[in-house]
Length: 452
Image 1 (cartoon, one colour):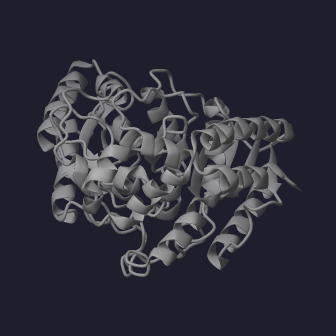
Image 2 (cartoon, rainbow, N blue to C red):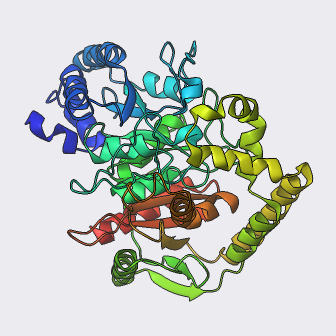
């Protein structure tokens, strides 16, 4: 098997090749570490690579493979980790200069689970500062350019920018990100990879730096749905879901008439329309219907303020107030919005959004999933946004519009690529009621096959 193709393979395919003794985990780790060193010399994708740890873990995986004692299908497979995940002895920066010298003593629980499953830690990937932007622009550590366009430096999407780019550019077979308002799904959609937003509370956040504890989730960014399923199993300390036989016969998909399909750019609109046609051809029933809860949820946020702002400022306000001059203005300004919110506003938003979520799930109960574009436009160029507050805020609000609905309406969700040939990536997002990851991943596998 040619080493030249390793970074184009899925995590499960790499794991299978290790199991057949066609790839040695040490060689595989060195392959990816070499690519990181040569293609990310400016450290814009990886804030910190961890070559010593990666090689030590790969050597242990190699020994297990030779002894017939592999821990599972992903033993020996490398993965990147968003730099809000505590890593023993390595700085966990949250993408901010304020936390540049923060070195945790132990790994986050999810990283420990992955290590016990034999996965190899390649390092810590870049992100929007404090994980607080859907664009992924981070002048503090440098912005990793979108993986899909070699000619124009486009936003990678945020906040899991480095995670998505590490997969899209072949600097990791898979990456771990976090999602509070779209931070897994936006960069996945804009870079043409799969992104799974897990249900709030399903995966433990011990050792994960928080932005908004009531909304924060962790999820994988991968080359395909099967990898997302396998890695979710590792993180959840459970077996992967059975995806065999997944199909679209009898599947009912709800296409909302409200908000989510408004103001799509031409590339996104055409790609999603063509994708829905292919799903219908494969046996899915697609029903258009009103979903007034979308507008209701946004009205609550507009009237009472953003829960994320309130919780983020409660957690990090002291640091932000004392060292805000070290922060990117695009993130600092979002923290400062919280000063206008009252405790009553924040609690009112929590209560009303939960009520809206229950009504939303009752309305959509007769459907397998709700299907919308992950983002209403393709990735815009960085140059027009980085130094223009009005353009930055407008683009950030647009790119997070649809994904935020999945968080505040208590869903699990997944985006997978649906772009047409030779066009910039477009994500098709599937949303289901929370704690339905197994059903969601089976559906996504069937959708992926229909779009292939």
